[in-house]
Image (cartoon, rainbow over all chains, first blue to last red; front, side, top):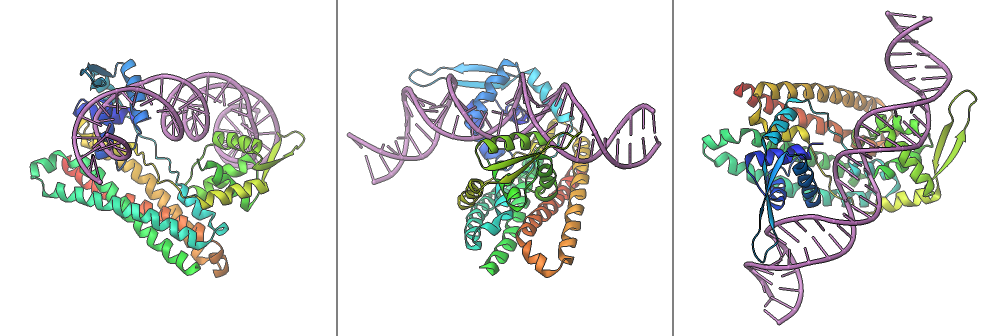
Amino acid sequence: MSLKHAVLALLEAEEGSGYDLLKRFQARLGYFWNASHQQIYQQLKKMHQERLIDCVVDSQPDKPDRKVYSITPEGHDELLRWLQQPIKPNKINDALLVKLYAGKLTQASQLLAEIRQHRERHECTLATFLGIEKEYLASPSAEQVQLQLPYLTLRRGILGEQAWLAWADEVEAVLSRMG
Amino acid sequence: MSLKHAVLALLEAEEGSGYDLLKRFQARLGYFWNASHQQIYQQLKKMHQERLIDCVVDSQPDKPDRKVYSITPEGHDELLRWLQQPIKPNKINDALLVKLYAGKLTQASQLLAEIRQHRERHECTLATFLGIEKEYLASPSAEQVQLQLPYLTLRRGILGEQAWLAWADEVEAVLSRMG
DNA sequence: TGTCAATATGCAACTAATTGCATAATGTGA
DNA sequence: TCACATTATGCAATTAGTTGCATATTGACA
């Protein structure tokens, strides 16, 4: 369970509300960690009970309260402890491949159509990643050094998407031949 | 939820017990779907209640009963229905990247050590996949045509592992420099 | 002026997956 | 012959994640 540790990592850099964290997940960890707003709010509540994070309620009149969370020393320790521990290999569950595996039962044209839809999304994602990379490579070298490790996570996203697209080429070639 | 549909796809090809299915998951869907024995037994029970599969108890004296499941017409329909439906993009959650992202808080040497451990596993996996591919390519061409779609899922595994290893090269280069 | 997206939070119910335990036979190697 | 891996199944408790709903404001666009 590393949603907890992803949250700690984000709060380590900067405090923030649940919504802030949701946005930061999308913007910064999007290539390798996805969490819904429900997951985040529930997790924050739990982590607050465990004293891993502090909470300051910022009540604005005529607006819903904004709860700003920040990491506690215990939270920091927990994050360091987790960083020390080995990580289990990732569990892969890819429904699209299940479909392809059982594809004899459908028309090739239909599989092809679905693959093409997924390809569009992956192309779009890759384009976004390449845009972020371009920005990074254009930034001052001091900043580049600072962001070296997050940049490596972006590289994972880029290489992963490129591999996906190369695979899609193969799949489309085969499915086209099958008509 | 496609564990259900992965099970249906396997039972569509051939009936089998929970344990059989566990083995088939490992041998045939291992590159893209992983399920524990608990998940499988629970799922089979549920699917039997939903009439998607039949169950014949094969009671051997002095041995625990073997429950052999087979797909029903309803199960077949459900599988076809699912094949028709579009699949949601995959949710990626990769704890190793969370660690790398927060890596400033640890020694580079430790990250390096962990990456290398993961690399070993990925190299091993790739070698297995390449072995299976070699067998496939050496099989009679009639069989190759028969297994065209499952072969594409293997290709996904191969391209995915190769991309992972190429990324690991980059990561190791950076972490070594950081020493 | 009305609708819609974004900001901002959360409960309740449900489904899915993990963890730990438990049983019991067969075969294999030290 | 003792221990350990494999075959073969399952319950119970817990944790994690999803779905649907609910509220309330701000700003933009038409």
